[in-house]
Length: 245
Image (tube, rainbow, N blue to C red; front, side):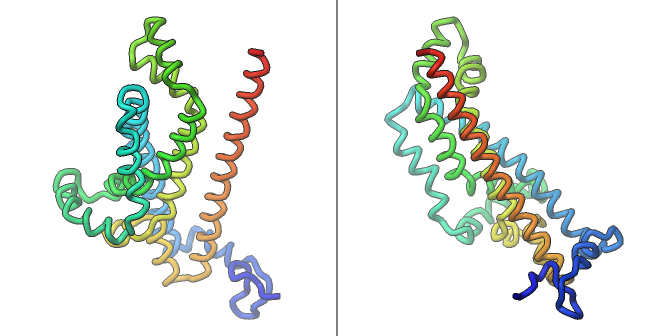
């Protein structure tokens, strides 16, 4: 049986954890510095992207659901469109925009959040939409309004708690997409986790394989967390239904 590359000894080809020890050796700055820099940039990007998506997407979806249901099909088409456009085409269209963004906000890696926000829109939309379809938002909003709540209180205190599962799923999927994105960052010349892996691979292919494995494990844990949240929410709704009956 072939020994996996991450635990393969460079000389004998046998089983060895020397690659893991060497990769995480603080003295191995040639590999660790670009990796940690890229990972830090990607985590900042993930947070900014989630904030942008939720602040813009959620209120718009609620507004369309409650006030403008006739626009639902058009809005859904516009939001799902980025998933059918290749990343290279998006970059071609975004390049002139990023020239202006660079002059206004600088060329920091965090500015990629504007492009990533477009990329994760389809995934975030489907997650939030599934949660909305499971809840009668109109009845909740009307009930809260009849009790004297303003629209901000309706959204924050009545609607958002009932959409918690969808918001969590949208956030975690957005984080996974941001951590795995390479094309946009590479073509716009920004250093993120995936571009750092390419740099590390040129220096030490074992290090690149190890960090790729860890990133896949992290995404797998995110998916488990989404599934756990979904099952907990379903159990909570069943208990609430039995209590009301």
